[in-house]
Image (cartoon, rainbow, N blue to C red; front, side, top):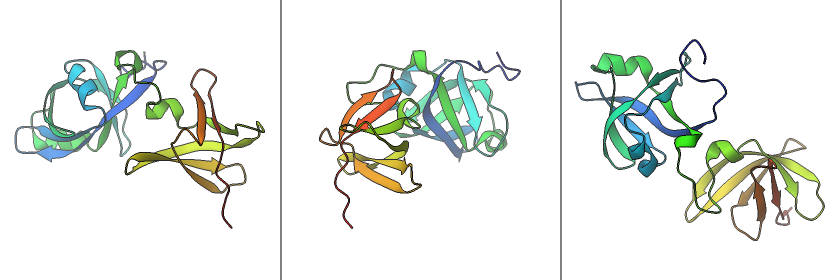
Length: 178
């Protein structure tokens, strides 16, 4: 356990972002990344990681109302001034408290940073840097070994295997157009 009360070795999953004060009673605008999971985490000790520096600390979400863009009340936060001291911030939950995802879905922390290899040749292409939604499909951003960038749609024809335990991703990249 660290001096801040945050276990150092436990894997955590970002479940949302505390954005800014809402109203005068210490409520906070909250963007939930996993709405159903966050509802199950109410009252649980969660790690709050301020995004403008500052040390992470443990706090529980007492209540949440609204959908993905919600209003949260945190234990011990009573005023808009209290909210401003801790926002913006990521909210992280211990991985063991998170629900298992269906096949083909991954938590950001599980895949970002994994090396990406060519499915046929085994040659390293680069590292998964990020992903974002583009309509019905996600797009994965790979930082190539030569320093360039490769954007690929997350579809089975391209992403052949995501091996979480083996810490690697295998793809059949599309032919690059000159």
